[in-house]
Amino acid sequence: MQTVEMQAEPRSTVGKGTARQMRRDGKIPAVFYGPKRTPLSVTIDAKEYRTKIADLEGSTHLIKMRSSSAELSEKVALIKDVQLDPVSGSLLHADFYEVDVTAKLQVAVPLHFVGKAAGIVTGGILQPLQREVTVECLPFDIPEYIEIDVTPLDIHDVVHISTVQRPPGVELVYENDDPLVTVLPPTVEEVKVAEAPVEGAAPAEAAPEPAKPEAKGGAA
Image (cartoon, rainbow, N blue to C red; front, side, top):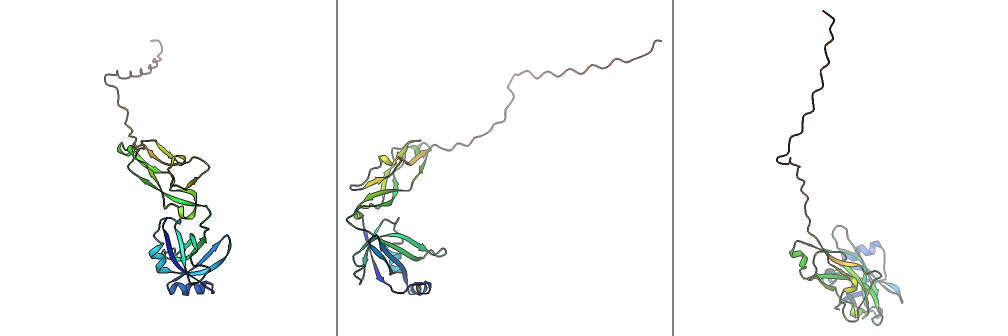
């Protein structure tokens, strides 16, 4: 997969006030950490992040660090977490996780559904059921996405994770053979029709009138 280079420098000062000043200066506070190192407070350039990383799909892109520090220079990392401003959406903080390029790791990779399903021609609706899958591979073998061709799918057909074609060196990680995408049948609106009388049917007989009581009278 493509590796993105990012400039990062260690920082010795921490705290909310320092972080606010850094952002005003066009810098972003971040942390660089890993299983075999103590977390290191660093700073990255906000503009470089926006132009190189912000629009990348998912968080599976490898970041190669450029730095004047030997602790960071040429190190490879994944973006583990970012904090965004809830109003402006601008980056407030980022976490970089160092990876060993010689050891396999598990990461989530987005799914791309391509083609036009056969069931859509007859009115069906393509329904993705999952948007990503977990893969295990070496860091430089991480695919940017897994592609699924939905062209053969007719209504009610399903693609399960076990049938997905994967790139060389990549294993899919799953416990259950979950469905990933299907084609739903067209939605039919039920129309209720009022019942009409059957033509030629005899009208219902009228109920007989109740008998009138006899008048009581004396002898003449």
